[in-house]
Image 1 (cartoon, rainbow, N blue to C red):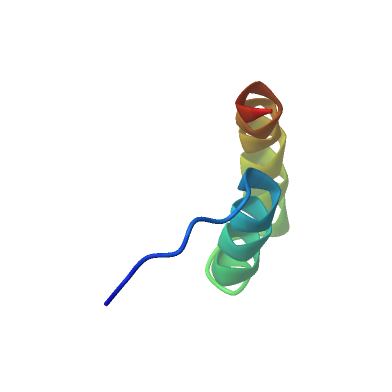
Image 2 (image 1 turned 120 degrees about the vertical axis):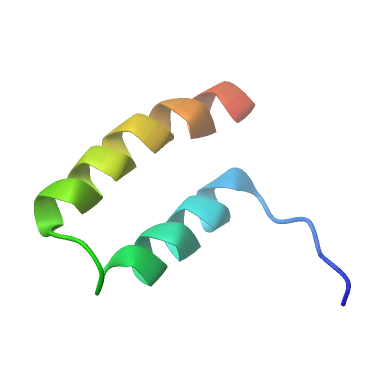
Length: 43
């Protein structure tokens, strides 16, 4: 198995989509808010 690099925005979208059925909308919003700061830092 080989990992391919992806940009931070895509990784965030994939993570939030994956968690969508597991957590509440409030949790998704919270994760999105905090992780968006990290994505901006990565840029």
